[in-house]
Image (tube, rainbow, N blue to C red; front, top):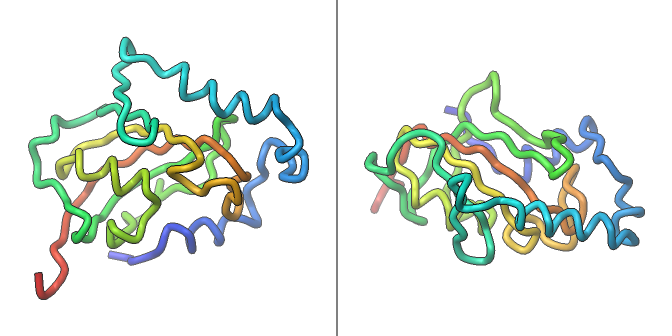
Length: 162
């Protein structure tokens, strides 16, 4: 399996992704910021969404959480897709090999959500900027962006010596 860092993957696609609004416009747009916040507020329990730490929304779309679950000390292999509130996909493993990461090195939202998964599960998460890339953004991700991820947990590996 190919081991990559999520931030490196984002940097690799930065030159090809086109954010819906230029970053200099975003920092001046209260309407854009309000859309980021309302995207989370629109996700209701009636649609299967649960609120986790930090205001992140979570819902399981496949599996039941009964497979082996990772801890922050583990390495995870996942297929994932990340998109902005505009629907623009900024990163994805679709059509390729799963990505393999030490869970503790990923953004805070993934560290919170992925331990709720069992191998074989697929979840969707929606996260406020504070649990993702914050006010600075990263690559194609604008500052203060609310992010949506679909994550499928393929495998959990215990690091050597643990």
